[in-house]
Length: 469
Image (cartoon, rainbow, N blue to C red; front, side):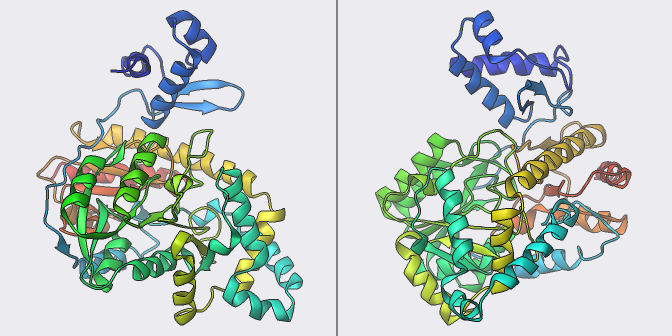
């Protein structure tokens, strides 16, 4: 165990024992460095690890504090994926049956794939829509259909630059949300019957794309904190003719895991060694809880192998369906395929978001959104601690709005899903996140909606239903 890990473990023990209570300030970096005889960088590494574990949180100009839910901690889930051969994907029937059941707005929305609309600046966006439309010339409406709104592309490239990535605007392709970009990218780098490495558990929509394109899935296990298992990936790349990878390196859906900078670099080196393109689904990039935005794998890409896809759907404007692809060496092929299919996302929607990014206070909105999501996560974790069985395992992601819960083996999450719906509570059962329908005793829970007494009752209801198994 490294020194920073030892120090982090000492602090974690004090938190679990109640010596450091919820909301209490922990020693400053300077104090900890002086008292324990370690360097400030070692303290920073330890505190960053504790943040990732969900035990502490940083407050601007105030220091580090114990998270409110940290008094008693349920263990984190295990890596439970069983090794499987490349699989034909047939999940759509199950996924659609689950999604169709989530339409009732009277249910507690723990199964929702989106955060609450209340968290987005929709009124301010309507002002930007009006301003953007006024500024659009008739010529632009047509010209921007093929290239993307110029101001929007410029603003996206600027945000890449602020994150340390020098991205040519010509590499950007504006799409109908990230999902269209991911669809187009996968079509550009594969043919029916090819093998694609995906995470397991994986976002169910990625499984549906593989099913539609008649591609076969190679499932790579995801550690709940460290992300994709690079040793398993390396072995599969050596032994199987994998043609592409589709991964979420940051705040992976459904588990919430994030690769460290070092592991992202190692992942890229594997891709580079085997010359395998990677679709980097990064739609939760702006929803981190720490003080420093994490760099994507795209930041290490010096050969154009990483196709970075993101959108504004999860962080700003879910109904506008504006996303983008930074396509690397595949940008032109993706752009041409888009012109052969949907041609263009809504130009007025692009103009509205471009105006908002320039004048609407986007970073201020993001800070407020992150604060709300972090508070909602604390509330859900505290409720899980109160109501779920003691042998429940649950993740503590450093951002996003999903938790992954692993229940005792006798729990059937599909039965739990149906029973919970009858009691007015939705959730997302584990099998919809696997090409081979594993994770029968797991669920994804969303804390993307403001926490209310109804939310608390929903968690209590789930706890009672779990005792029936």
